[in-house]
Image (cartoon, rainbow, N blue to C red):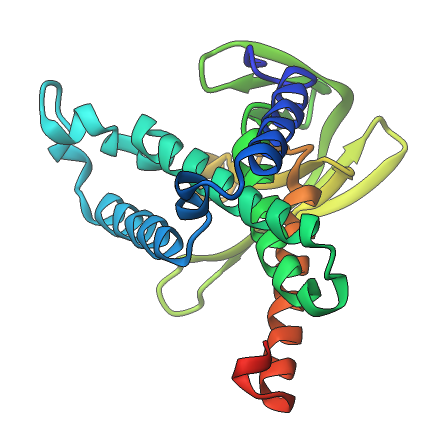
Length: 271
């Protein structure tokens, strides 16, 4: 279900956050604390801690995060949504924003453009992922051959209307000739009885600019017995902020290319 911090509150808080940092940089940018907050040393520490957190979080087995354990208290049962990781992302966003604001106030666009693109791109990608997570919705829809499906089920068990109807018209399963294991499967889906599309594993269908349909599972009991598959399970993901994150990644990549080109054509001291 939508979070308390979903749109438009998350956008308002993000704008207020940036305005606050602009005031801090404008009024107190020359003070030692603010200078340290945007220093290269802080960059190293923040990025190092984030990398270490992700490595540890990826290596900790889920069974270690039991009730009352240190791993549970730190949120390592699902570390990307843990409170500690959220604080790290907040500090990293504040650090990057201070750097960008400081360079913008110096008004040296031509010299600082690659640098600004790298830092602003990373900030945009992280902000899109972090702030946009409150608007992200993921559910499952059971699409059968008989009745048209118009709802999806969220993880908390609630039911959300789709706004369109889905109907399974055909299903194909490709098996390995040697051992009979499933190699690929695909579903032919009719949308509102007007559009037909084929959705396969790793080949989703873009329903809208912010919504994608993925083939998640199917009626394996009938397939195993050689009968006709009667239903398919679709994963429906709504991500309004995914294009913001993508724009940040593109900006980051272009900025890195420009920095490399500058390094190869100019001495390091002039960067």
